[in-house]
Length: 144
Image (tube, rainbow, N blue to C red):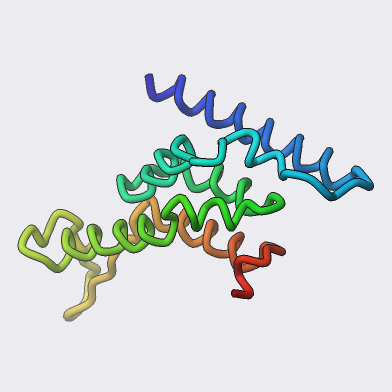
């Protein structure tokens, strides 16, 4: 099942990228962005996809990054609760590491006096890449 969902996400990511390139190459930039047509005005599908961030899904950030790079992508992601889900993931991870259930993510001890390091969680690279894409996106939502 996991392989099927990864394949579907990769296909949808390719479709989003393709139509974004087509739309950008058109001289007619007016009209409704294709992401609105794809995800609908309520964006419930996009909200479910954004919700995967708080579940530490390592594949979802790549697709969300592609959406963020599209026309009006950041606006749709913000309306779908992206920042809330990123904060939720950070809070959940912090509670796992430092909260009552501490120790579920262990430190790696190094040989030497009092030296230890922590491995970054697998989801962190995707979340940081997504934030970089949002900050570099050319979307009016960021300026307000």
